[in-house]
Image 1: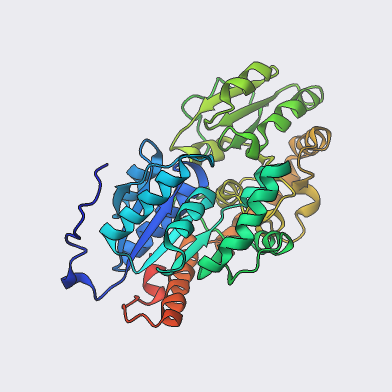
Image 2: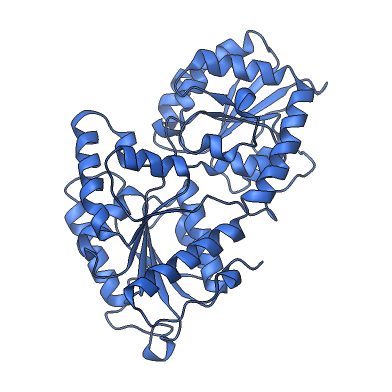
Length: 401
C-alpha cells in the first residue's frame, strides 16, 4: 500500500476543496472496527466526500476500504502500546501533511492515542473508542489508560460512543468529553434471513437433523470470551449430547484455545462468509468480557437467529425489550453460560420466537445507513462549531441506499 506523496494529488487538489476530506485512522484492521470503518468509507464516498483510510497493511481493512471507494494509505501501527508509539505519532503527522484532511476520525485505542498526540486539537478530531482500553487492562496499566483518556479528551472535538453504556463507562472513569452516541448498525441487505446451507468448513451434521449447531463469531482473543465458552461446553454436551460448537474467526489465542478445547468443538477459521454461518446456526453466542456494542449479535439477529450474549456494555441496548432474561448471561461465568445454552438448545419454540422478534428489532433500529448518516451529521456539527467553510453533504445522502 503506497504512501501518499508529500504534495496532494487529485482528488486532493485545490480544485476539489468544495467537499470535505476525511481521514480515518484505524488499528486494528480486522473484526468489528474494520467493518465500521468500511461502512463509513462506503457511505461517505457515495455522499461525495474524499475519504482516506490510514491503517497497517496485511488486514482485511485495506481491501475492504479500497473496494468501498476510499483511498488507502499505509500507517504502520501495532495494537499494543510501547516504544513504537513515537514512530506511530510521526506517521500520523506525515499522513496528515500529505492528505490535509478537514477532519480526522480515529478508531480504537491505538489510533486514538497516536492521532490525539499528533494533532492535539489542531485538526478537527473525532475519537471512537470501540470499547475502552482500560477495560482490557488491569493494575497499573489500567490506571495509566484511564489517566490518558481523561487527559486526552481535551483533544477530541467529539468522543463518539457506540452505546449509551460505553459513554457511561467513560464518564464513570472520569473522562470529561464532548460526547456523542451513534449506535452500531448492520447492512440489512447483506445480513438477511436465508435458507440454511452447510457452510464451507462445517463438519458433517447429523443426518437426522438433530444436531444443535451453536456458532460463535469473533476474533479469537481474550476480549471475546471464547475461553469461557470452552469451559462451559462440557456442561452443555452433558445435557445436549448432539450439540456442536463452531468458533468462526482467527486471532492470537487460536492455538491456546485449540489445546484446551473439549470434544464437540470445531475451529472454522476466518471467513468473509459469516452470513452463511448465521443462517446455519441454531444459536449464536458471543460471551465477550467487554465491548462497546458488538456487531456479531446484530448481524445474527438481522439473519433471524437467536443470540446469547454476555451482559457487558451495549448488550442490553442491542436486544429487543424483554429478551434480557433469556439472552443475557454474566460475563466470565461458564456455569451460567452453559445453563443458558442448554435452555435455549432444548426450546425450539422459544428460539424461533426470539429470532423473529430480534430480526424485526434490528431492521427497525440498527440499519447501517442510519448510522452512517448520523456520523456525517456529527461531522457537520463539528466543522460548523470550528467555523469551517467546507461543504458537508446532507446526512440523508450518506444514508441513502
